Length: 111
Image 1 (cartoon, helix red, strand yellow):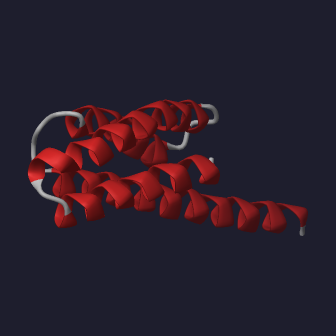
Image 2 (cartoon, one colour):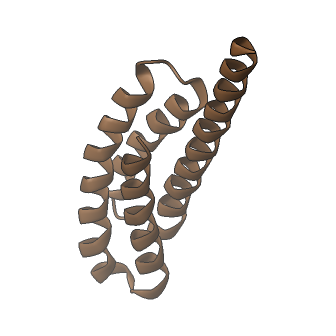
């Protein structure tokens, strides 16, 4: 699951930086390919978050999918890409926090 989030975050970062540095018509070569990878990988992230259910990471993964579709459209690329990046970083933080809480609870249960 961390690998899926890393791939999504990397491609969102590339699309966001390209949206800032490259003018509008040429940036769609980067944004459309990044959107395709984000969409496919995002579906895998949704499936990974759904079983077992992790609420906040699942919501972040579900919100990533429509943003990836919007990234295909000729809108401003950078804000959409950075929103995807922020969602994935939030989901990664929530998953790690839940993992530490689960580890602490398991350690307390053994004691």
